[in-house]
Every structure is written in structure tokens, then in C-alpha cells.
Image (cartoon, rainbow, N blue to C red; front, side, top):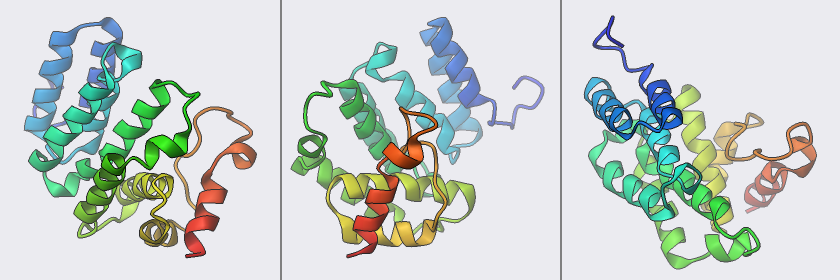
Length: 191
């Protein structure tokens, strides 16, 4: 980062290092510098959402508040609005998993935030790896919220491609069998 003051690609990694070291000052400075260098780099914001998670000493409110604050401030092309799905997914995941996932995702506040994220990202050119990532999260969030017809265009655009996250996080090697992707795609494409 010191060699090339315009380069932002190392910033998410520096955020991860600061998180591992427990250095909150470095964490905040890295984020601020990353946004200064390249405010469209979605990975900077995603790294901060993870840094604010319960598993790293934060809270569900911290994650959600971060996305709510930065989605309108970040350039729309960054796709930060779609990261509300990541924040909700981690909030549900870090919570009491004995609670029904359906009950969490069908809360009117959750549904409205996911639908708003979809509306916000709809005008973006969702192409390449960046676009696929955004579409995967939107498809996942909309499917979880029961918004199958809104998720359908994302599944159609993605085709058979997929990301490890958000679809497969637990049983590596058995994801093809145990993950929700096939079911979600089938349910949404049927509408």
C-alpha cells in the first residue's frame, strides 16, 4: 500500500490483518484509506461488515447499521446496497440458529431492506465477477424472503454459476447435495 498510494486491492486484506491483530485503530484507518483510494471497491465494505460481526466482537446492530450508513454514501456502482443481504445472513447465522430461518427472513423489516437493495442495484450493469457476486447475494436474499419473482432474473442471469458464499458455507464437499442453491433456483425459476 505504501509503494502505490492509488492501489486499494490490499485494503480488504489489511482490514483482515487488523481484525486478527485486534488493532481497531488500524482497522478504521485501513477502511478510511480504502474508501479514499477506491470508493467503488465492494470488498472493502464487505470486510468491514465481517469485522463488525458478533463472531469478531461486534453486534448484529453494528453490521446492519454499517450497511445502512454506507449503502447511500458509497457510489452505486460498488453494489454496497446488496451487502445488506450479507449483514442479514450473518446476523441470522450468528444468532440463535434454533430459530426458524424462515421466521427471520420473513420479518417485514428484513424483506423491505432486501427488496430495496434489489431496486437499488437493478439499474447497475451487473456484469463480470462483480455483477455475479451482487446477483448471487440478491438472489439468495430475495429467495430467503420469499420474493421468488424478484429473484428469478438474477438466477436467469447467473445461469449455472455460483459463489461459495452465500450458498455453501458449512459442509464442504457435500454442498451439491446439502446446500440450498438447487432448491432456491428451482423455486424461483418456476415463478
